[in-house]
Image (cartoon, rainbow, N blue to C red; front, side):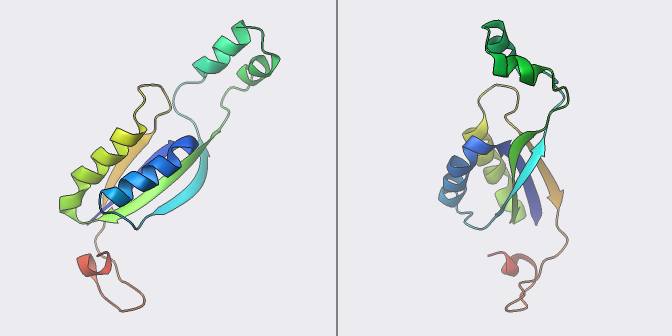
Length: 124
């Protein structure tokens, strides 16, 4: 089993939920988060400031500002990992900074509380 953690834009939540369901992954967690990548300046804010928008100019001064994001956590069997990662990438890739990150980690065991099922049976 693997846990796939995807950090995505807030406006991509519904598309990601639908794509995961269509890919056969109806169960996941979605958490609100704030963060930023390595870039300190949002290019859209820079363009807005150049056009004279005061709000954009004010925000440019906030180096290290945190942006709202959504974190999806999905636990899948090993044979589903590539499909789930590709699904998340296909939906969220715009080619612009801030598209997100995907992390894949091993899960050594899981237990369904209601039934006591363990391992892959607990996530099916």
